[in-house]
Amino acid sequence: MPFRTLSVFFAFTTATLSVLLVRAQSPQALQSTAASTSSPSPPISLILQEDDGEHRLRRPGGPAGSGSVPGFIIKIDKLNGNAEDFYVGYEILNPGAMIPFHKHHNSEEVVIFEDGGATVTVGDKRAVAGPHSIVFIPRETWVGITNTGDKPIRGYYLFSRQGFENFLRARSVRPGEPLTPLSPEEVRRAAEDGHVMPWDTSKGRTHQAYQTPDATRNRWLPKYGLQRVGVSR
Image (cartoon, rainbow, N blue to C red; front, side):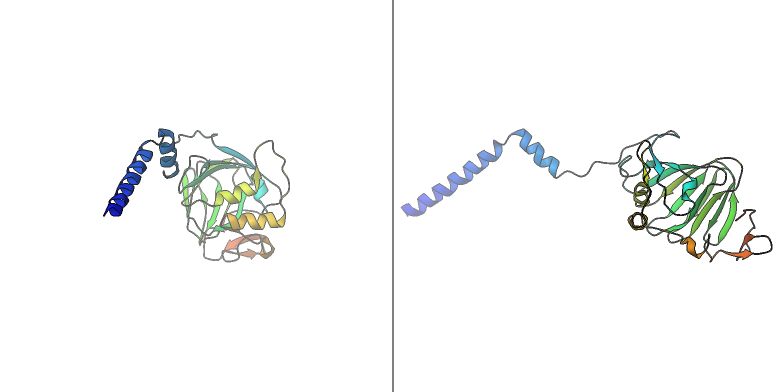
């Protein structure tokens, strides 16, 4: 019995000391523990003017035609607003500038044109987009855009999921940084990280599923009876 009483006494003493030690912890230590288990920082509300955002300049050596739009702005993504889902970009297409044929694997895209004059080919549709037009691009859908007008076109590009910004950052630099040419391996890796497939121009300037050559006028006609657009090739 004395041995059992002594064991109970030691167990009670140990438990009491443990409680006192926990209560004696500093507030800083408790705050540190709470911070380590807290959720990530929430997204940040933003009101962005036209020129606000992360300015980038494209490096030479990207997909054919992409150099016709030398600069762009990343408006919203994980690094700009801590967005959880969206990527939003902005760029200006000067007359003759183009966004080469490509498709996105992981995201739907919405393009909003503030100005008219963009010839858009997306899915089985082709038309000239007027001012304030909206283009919806489903996943795995080829799209190409060219400014066939005579004035600059301002465009916003909204993605339902992030990823494409990785492609853009890998192929660009901030203003003032050296514009080193892209290597073929960098282009391949950027496309993989950005969940995008640029059109292989060795198969033709545009996707063959949408257009066939009109040799008499050296132009391209849509296969599906779509409107002809006067774009010299």
